[in-house]
Length: 125
Image (tube, rainbow, N blue to C red; front, side, top):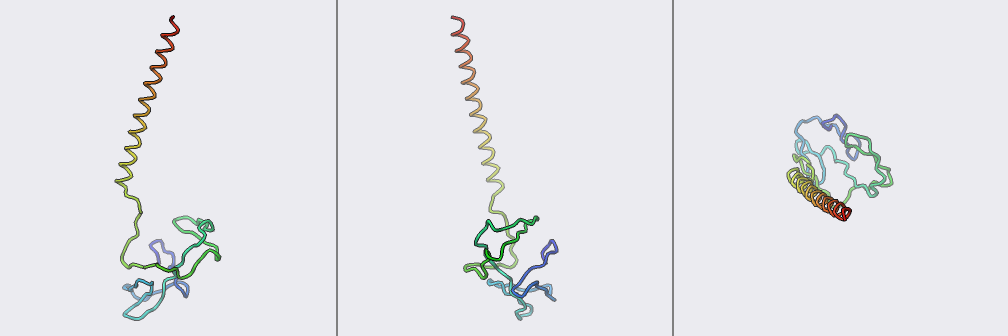
């Protein structure tokens, strides 16, 4: 089961284990005490527009867009998938963008003041 309590699916349906210490190899085979007990169901979605959002990070796909046993997929046991975004890098980029915006805003205010002065000076003559 996932941490949210949802079942994990294998090739034969829902995976139920009697051991708390299974091993999973790179192809997704699940073994307990050296004996293969299940195979993770690994699929690739060929048409991502066919996905329907279910909420809480879950999606449903039409059967026609699911490709069974995609090539080049590797399963890693004990790893936690993380975001492909570095929070510190993105904060630095955001601060740079805000500062750039502020400097452009100051330039525009300067042009506005210059035009205001020019119009008012010309209007006096």
